Amino acid sequence: MILLRRFSAYLHQRLGFRQLVAGLHDARLLPQIPTRNVWLSVFGMYVLRLRSFNALEQELRISRRWEAWVGSRKPSADTIGRVVAKMSPDELRQVLSAIHRSAWRRKAIHQRPGESYRVVAMDGHELGASRARCCPECLVRELTVGEKTVLEYYHRVVVAQWVGVTPPGILDLERIKPNEGEVVAARRLLERVLSQHARLIDVISADALYLEAPFFKLVLDAGKHLVVVMKQERRDLYQDAERLRSLVELQILIDGPRTTRLWDIPDLTSFTTLDRPVRVVWAEEETLRRKIVGGKAQEILEKGTWIWVTDLPAATVPAAKIQLWGHDRWDLENRGFNELSSLWHMDHYFIHDATAIETLLLTLAIAFVTTYLFYERNLKAPARRHLTRLAMAARLADDLVLLRGASVWPPALEPSG
Image (cartoon, rainbow, N blue to C red; front, side):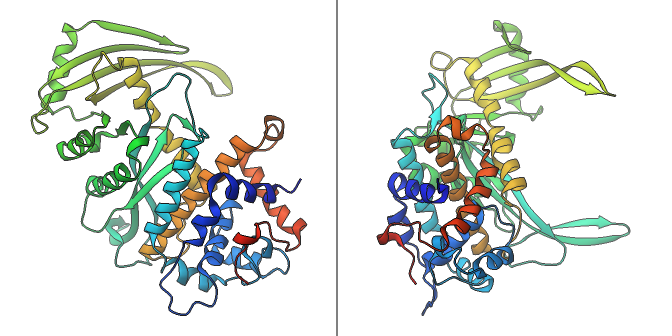
């Protein structure tokens, strides 16, 4: 079985890849290599988990290999760098949005059994930092190294990702610009996400940084709901919730090794800048974990306190569900940033240009969700039993050799050349 041919057929038949790729453009006046050839090269780089444009160029130089995926007119590393810096990130956002809508429409994205709400988590992530290379859009910070103060240049993005579902696709991302805060960029991202995916989002989950009135109002005015962490002990809302815990009924929940003492406090008006009441869910958790310490197995009791602010009423969504959604936000770290950074090279600057960074991150998001969908929804359980998604990337690379340049695309989609 040629897995790469099966993957391309899945992209074309299930996700409408043919029309989506055909609509990509860049700002070159007289391009010798079509945009789609260049973008398919970058998309293939992520699908096969290659580490750099130079590694990709070495693959492209091999005769009768990448022609199967890209076509006969293959770009160099320099051409790829120029083109991704001239592409429109908004065009790729439309591609990503179309793929997500298609996947939800075909029920290829699976929620937990019985779950009726679709939850999106938002958080910031720092990309690679440098003390030498920079661009006009870099963020800058001062570090003390020995007795010297040095400048470090870096980029941060805010990411929106579905959580509590499989696959945990990234909806969109927004770059944080110089001299602005994370939440300012998050509000831009939120407006765009709510516009593109309004019918596919019910709840926004976020960290304590996002516990501010403008962010809340943006979500609530769109008819959506929030679950946001609260950590600041000096807030009136925090202090009122702490005092009122003794007046509400304590719930004790046992879920495997975790025992939770839960207080559900409704109708608090201490969030004065929001000008509407909110609900606070306060959870004290104890989790019994088995760890190896000094070569011996020991049971360790981990304790933690979590506080969430939400607009959802207790009659609609119980406190245990708020707790679940609050912890689902870790999907953004575990099945998002951690995997994409360690296995997909998310933090690597393939080219240090603001537009190119956005273009590449959006292409990565497309590669991530399409390969995940193919693995989970097209491959049968026996085929997945001894094939991880990382091993699948190696299988797809091997198939380029087996195909010996024969195109994997239907005639109407074959790249120019």
